[in-house]
Length: 213
Length: 129
Image (spheres, each protein chain N blue to C red):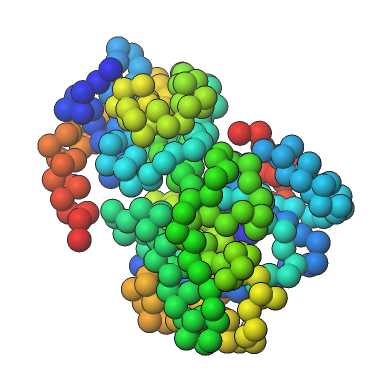
């Protein structure tokens, strides 16, 4: 999470980055403004009280990680594009790329019936989420904008797609072309240690994790 | 509540309006349209000392969090409790009931450095592509 924020804050204004990462089996992330009490309750209900969880800088809901491929994209957020347009365009393109690999899927066209912040990401697909034909959610994500740059954090259930990890990554890689660059930067740039340390401390701190909005 | 023409603007679309010794701060109509349906507002802490251009609050629309920057340096003197209860007010009335916070500016000169309404309109034209 700290590295995603560093890529958002310290990459060149016009730069596009793509980062893939994975989690230990029992991990969760939750949205920037979600209540920690809600998250704790849901984690208990899931039967994973020892699960480690981190608050994201992006919006959206609680995500249980382990069986997913997570990835982040940072990009120049050109005005006047709305978050809905970015979300829809990116997912549309990823969906098209996966279709070309032979995967049948839907882009959900209706908004979810659940309002408010306290949601579990994969329990109910939102508008423009990618789902399997039976409605199971394949890809969801969340966004954040700081100054003129945006961060997208996505979670893709690899078990619902009969493609290799390399094929899925390639599809996502190609879809990042919507941000105006053919080849996003995949190599993590060099950041000053002090800048990264501050962000790592932030994500490890109780203040950030428990903050009551 | 201030009219659009009476406010000063940042490039990041926050507005400020000098109201006696304090300034009222919110986001412009352009910004609320861009952010779309706001579902949460995180207000700055009362008494917090801030610098102009510093990220002091956040708003969240469906799945997206946006930083809100202070147009002025000074001390946060009030936050709008109504937008916490009903964040959609910011979409409905960004220059009125949807104001976000009040700040006691440490220097009123910073206000003059912000764009006036006409300059802001010109700036918005340059953002279209």
